[in-house]
Image (cartoon, rainbow, N blue to C red; front, side):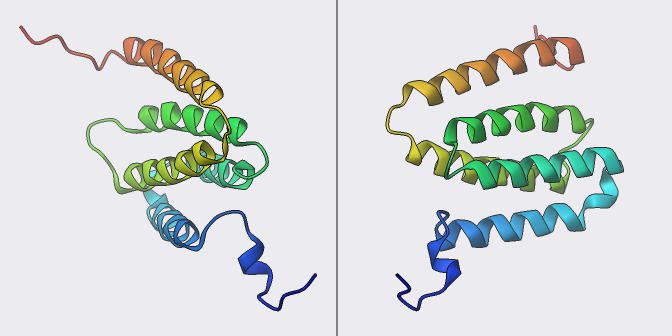
Length: 133
């Protein structure tokens, strides 16, 4: 039934989230000169895929967010670039929306544990951890 409100109101992502996601993705696109082309394409496509999957497959969307956060850590060397802050913002919004769509918290906790397990060896291999004495 057509109620005359249009296709924008039928999206599963609320209007505030669409606005935030659009602004953050624009920031990533504008700051693309800071990244190699392969990393920029991978980060942007992963964030778009996670956003597209948030309504139908929220657990998969959370998994994509966890993997993207680990990959974002690899892209930061000495400082926190603008693109990584924007990517983290997109990951936060998509994870929030995916978590709200899950009927039980167990799958989200499983993805959280897998993301933590993925980031721990990454930080040990990267060698950026320093023990202060």
